[in-house]
Image (cartoon, rainbow, N blue to C red):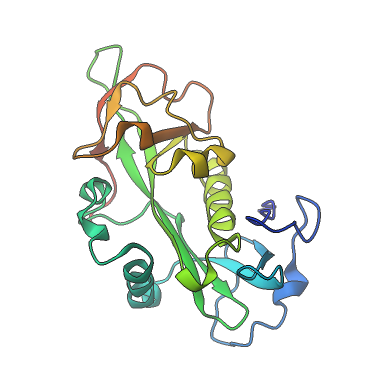
Length: 226
């Protein structure tokens, strides 16, 4: 896969879009790390200093679970599992190939994002549903915030979802952050989450034009059971 290297948040990109920074992670400092499953590596800025920091995105492995959950607790607080989005994740496994982690040059977990299979509602009142993805949670180690790791994870997830043939991604999140990736509330007006949420934060990105046309109703979990 020839994924694009993501630009950093708040720091200039270290090279032109489309370049891969394999040399930046040639020596990861940990022989136990897997090869980057998505062929995506890059340099992001260290917090507030503009210093290049090598980061790679990997497919999540079972051994990442405890470290990932600890990062989510630090970044989002211990109540992150009470969000309405978690109702669509509980008891399920993420969409195939779309549970990702970012690790720094020393092998430390710097960020995580997962996408989940959902059914997005009726088309034309005929009762039929269509598949889509729900993004979340996205989290970055608080010590690495504003370094571009979140951007790298989201861009990688979008590129991989598109490569795998998915039609749309939905999420509940900050519009000012996610609009840079093309997310908006334009296609979510007739859709709803299965619990409390702020409507203006319910966003969608079509990977295939028209994938959400006519979609109505409450999102339902559609992923494989854990």
